[in-house]
Length: 524
Ligand code: URP
Ligand code: ZN
Ligand code: ZN
Ligand code: ZN
Image 1 (cartoon, rainbow, N blue to C red):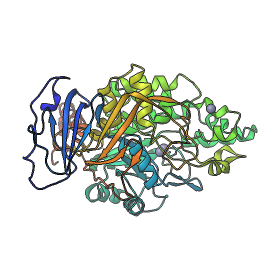
Image 2: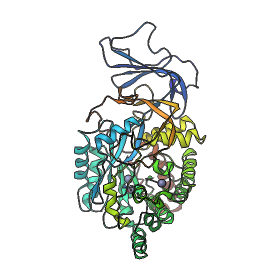
Image 3: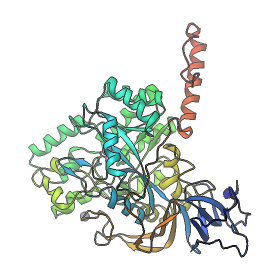
Image 4: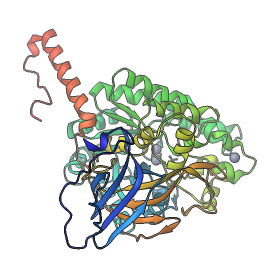
């Protein structure tokens, strides 16, 4: 495997087919250091019609400059797989508002930050069709997106119809991940028995179960208590749903997933105690993944106590940012050592006038923060620049691991022959200062305001097209594509199958009368 060579090792180029003579869309990224999750190498990257054609030295014969070839100089820079943001909510109708970053501006901002694919959530109301929700989100996204995207679908209630629709979504619509809310009581929350049903179904159809892990009953009771005490400000948000509320739900989700041996993905891990639950489960051999987000890695919940109400309100999200200021560092350490696996942003932004809906009652502040544009820089600064992870781990947690878990790999998440040319030229030495005044998002506030980050995306390439370069966009609404995902991702399901196999063999030894018990994988 050519692109797995040691860093700096000159290697002969590999390409999938001879270049066609006719002028096509050709791009050469010259002289950079190509970084994948498992190796780095000084190499050129040749892209034809949106796909990587060659990675190595001298990918074009000397003197060969085909018509239409565009050359980008990446000397002194890193050449990375574009980021995959596993968690966004563009133009999400939520808590009486609608998030202001829509699929157009939100995905443009993603590109400016080095992210070339987002994964958003189609979320039906209780009693409503999952497929209808999926179609609705596609109708919003397809004409608007500037980068590629996929959709997770939420299971907010349970019935035979939901069960059937999960199968249709998986088999025909390119969905292999379903999110269950353990919070937002009476709105999206499902109970344990519904979690059990949904996890069982996920396993049957080869999907991964995702959870928003907070105890929704305790959240509701905690809020009542705070309001009764006269605590109505944003600080009440965290006080009413402390770490234990998140950790308890995380352990409950792990326990229920384990009962049916379904792969589990905990979205927005926000606290040290919840992260420890995920780490313990992984060390117990469970197929569990944890996703910290840019907000939780880059800032903390002390801002809920800011004297300026709006500043505090702009930090309100669920589960809350934690006031323990050692939390971001702790989460980053776990991310660096593989206790946590992927990163999203949970970008769900509301302007100040929308946040003001909760002026007299924190439970009415629309929940959500920014992150889609800044996720990559935050993780570089706090993860790589700080010395916690190397550039390969950076690629793993910002792109490759997501591609593997959600079955997009190696089309996405890798720079190799045949992969989509979703590429970022990254300057690890340059710095930029994050500000709402200069960001490309629609929202009028940035939770990372004033933060100076090393690691700047200089050029972003989406399926072979230079879409962002030195602050200038060359992209139109609808240029992004919906990327369907197949079920039974090997990265997660190989272990699940093997674990079931071993279990059924053990059972046969212990209970020979059950010899005819079906091994669920035999027919698959
Ligand atoms: O506060 C948040 N996280 N808003 C988006 C909805 C969710 O729970 O992910
Ligand atoms: Zn959530
Ligand atoms: Zn503050
Ligand atoms: Zn979310």
